[in-house]
Image (tube, helix red, strand yellow):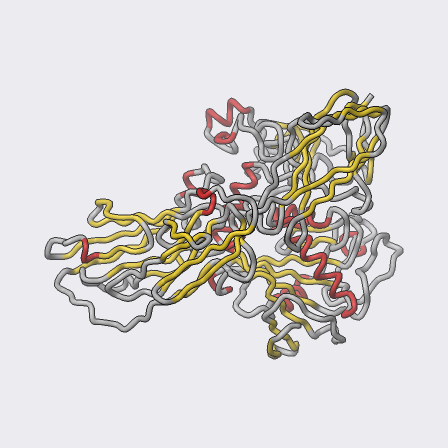
Length: 597
């Protein structure tokens, strides 16, 4: 059951709850429930993803929660959201609607519905609109988002889900997506690419089925579109020149592919099919770099530090608290008068035996992520920050009774993945740095100053326990190191060859289907993926028209709403498959051979 308190903001009654499972309740449309889904820190110091539901009646709220869970589980498998999940708070705003569904769904002749956010397909029920363009009342959306305490326009991103099984979404200041379509959970990160990342569409059409024509404008301002050749990009050191020739995270090689910005000719993009062109694939490196920059810029890399506004004595400990990505560790380097003297979250000045007088101490905090190569981004405040103190050896620090304790940590209410970085922060006595002691399955292990990277332990499959102690206080986490599994089911083959220790082989005389079923030892949504002949990993969502239907492979593919799905081509193909669980564990890929004759 939910527990919480009701507060009134303006004219809307809001219940702020503390646990992520609320019973459906009768409510007026203006009466919203704010649900903390994932809390990693104070909302004033985090990037807050606020998800609104529209067209969900009180009885529909379990459906909204299921839609949201699917969206989030897909989002956490996609970089950089996966590595920076710890930067993000997620709040759901449950807004009971007087009517179920949204307007003009799926046709202009469909009913107009009265819903709190006024969501509607066809660009808002316009005769000249685009059917899949799902819009809403931005003013209403902001009103409901403002009900989430501690969030502001500067530290949040709004995503609205419509109670609809129709494909659709939009990405402007705010992002929208249908909640129940087979591909809905992939629409959201694409639209967040627009809303959060400022990325452009890489489609080579505007109206589906209508060729986009030839681009005749100047060099695009878009970071992932160009008129330049690869040689010109390298020579001018512009656009995606730093990534050229590398294997794309979306499959293939980073290079120059014609089409984008709704034009078929005359403009080029970095990858054959990154997320901004084809839903189901990952962001390529160019888009991922931008998204890393934008997510990081929504928080302060340095969360707190010893005050810098007055000189300090050399008899104290300086400290700094940073953000903690889940995928890697942040670096802190200390210098005195330009000379490196230490690394980590604390610097004990008394151990340095400084010469009498004044000195300049700096702490440089950097996020060394491999997702960023642009020096301008790497040196920006999103990824690099410096704090500076003046140390005066004539000063004496007054004593302060600061009890040793934890102040924050990686959340302990859900398992962490077997390759996660787990962190803690502590109180800050002025003359000593509390030492954090780490134990893994009851055995003392070494960690970082305030975090520990579980990857270096190469944990055996299964469940483990991590504990941190500081003084007499302790915190513990369950570690989920068990990979998820995925099984495949194929339609009847003309012939097959399945032998222990060998890759299974199947021969089909025509179209065939593939169903992937992910499983895990813990509750939650398991995301399955597959790739063909070493191309990019593709999210298995069932079939575009029916999430419960299997994927269909044919020689030339199946055209659905002017897009082609499942094109395989005749011949022999290697199909790999894997699963990703809610803790972020990625199963080892398996494979089979399919020959289409």
